Image (cartoon, rainbow over all chains, first blue to last red; front, side, top):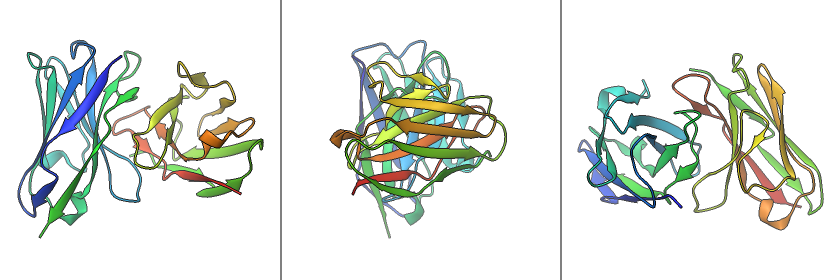
Length: 119
Length: 107
């Protein structure tokens, strides 16, 4: 059973860079697409971007200028960096896997981690 | 971006009821439509994809229908564990987008 676990600071200062890592266990990171999705408190879901195990990426245009997603296949991990954060970036951040049938569908999710941006 | 609009935003129902949630896309999405269930403090769970296909392990009381721009999720007989928030998602084009959610509450 594939499991995903997000890790990283729960508090980030405004204008700084948010950094999170997702560790995949119970399966290989190879041959799949992996995404970051976020959910502000009490609000809906927003896809941030995905990375293929080979390193190719695709980002949501609304965040593209501030987002970098990278992968480390040797550690079965992928990571998110979001620069110049503001209070609007306060959210629960999820990592998720896409099934073979579509890189934009999500069948396994991490439990999520709340990141709060403070001023 | 394709906009996804769900209705209703909230719904009160009783155990055993049949409920339907609707999702409308701002343009045709060729059945590239998924439904997720989210319980408080938990990650979303994939229920259906391709508008009508049940994800493995999901009870058969959940079903989906629709085409073009209009899709529905039906729960045939509500169980206590079904009270949650439901999201539709289009994965026809990037960026994939979600509906605003429908909160299903106990009457």
